[in-house]
Amino acid sequence: MAGVAGKVAIVTGGAGGIGAAVVGTLAARGAAVVVADMVGDAADAVAADIVKNGGRAIPVEVDVADEASVVAMIAAAVDAFGRLDIVHNNAAAMGDDVLGRDGDLTTMAVEVWDTTMAVDLRGPMLACKHAIPIMVEQGGGSIVNTASVAAHAGDMQFMAYGAAKAGLVNLTKAIATRYGKANVRCNAIAPGMILTPTAQQRLSADVIDMVMRHHLTTRVGTPQDIAEAVAFLSSDEAGYITGHVLFVDGGVTAHLPHVADMYESV
Ligand SMILES: NC(=O)c1ccc[n+]([C@@H]2O[C@H](COP(=O)([O-])OP(=O)(O)OC[C@H]3O[C@@H](n4cnc5c(N)ncnc54)[C@H](O)[C@@H]3O)[C@@H](O)[C@H]2O)c1
Image 1 (cartoon, protein in one colour):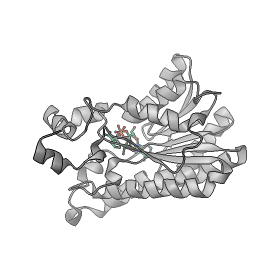
Image 2 (cartoon, protein in one colour):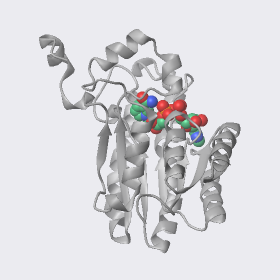
Image 3 (spheres, helix red, strand yellow):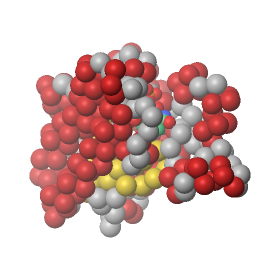
C-alpha cells in the first residue's frame, strides 16, 4: 500500500499546533492514529473530529516524560489497532513555564533544564524504548523525531531546548544504526519557524517579519509543512532514508545571517 494507508501511528503532542496537523494528515491518508497528549480534553476533541470525518483515531492522555504513562500509551495503540508502524515524537515543553524561562544559562532555574530534558529528550527515548520491540517483532516500523534548527546552532537563549534537541538528533542516528537491520527506520525533522496558533498569539507581526527576513522562502512555515514531511518519512516510499535529519526550515540554516545583513541581500 502506498503512503501511510493501513499503518498505525502514534503522534505525541498530537493535540497541539504541529501535532494536530500531523494527526489530521496521517488519518486523511488512511492511517489509524493515536492522538497522544498531556491535555486529555484536547486529544479527545482532535480524535473525535477525525472519527467524525470517517477516519480512525483514539485519544490517549499521556505524559511522555513518565515511563508508566508511555507504556500505557503504546499498549493503547496496540490494543485498539493491533500493531504499531509509526511513532512521531512531537511533544515538547513549549509553554511559558519551561521554554519561556529557558534564557540566560547563568540564571536559569535547574528545574527548567530538568523539565526540558525530561519532556523533550527522555520523552522520545521512552517512546522509542517501548515501541521498538513491537516494531522489531512485527517486522519493521518508522520513527520520526521532531528536533529543531536549535539543535544545530547556539543561540542567545533556549540553551536547554537546543541541548535537548541536539541529543535527540544523536539518539535518532543511534536508533537508526542499531535497529536498521530489523527494518526499523529512524529520522528527525528540524523545523524552522512554524506559525502554529500558539506562535501566532505569542509573537508580534514585527517579530515574525524579523525572523522571516532570515528565512529564504517567501512565506512562513505552517504545521502542514511539517505534516507533509512526517507523512513522507513514515511511508514506505522513504524506505531507503534512515538516520537523516530533514530540515523543514525555509532555508534559515542554509546561510550565515550576518553576511546576509551586511549585504542586505535577504
Ligand atoms: N513551532 C515552531 O516554530 C517549532 C520550531 C521548531 C521545532 N518545533 C518543535 O515542534 C514540536 C511541536 O511544537 P508546537 O509548536 O506544535 O508546540 P505546541 O506547544 O503547540 O504543541 C505541543 C503539544 O505537546 C503537548 N505536550 C507538552 N508536554 C507534553 C508531555 N509531557 N506529554 C505529552 N504531551 C505534551 C502539549 O499539550 C501540546 O499539545 C516540538 O517538538 C517543538 O520543539 C516547533
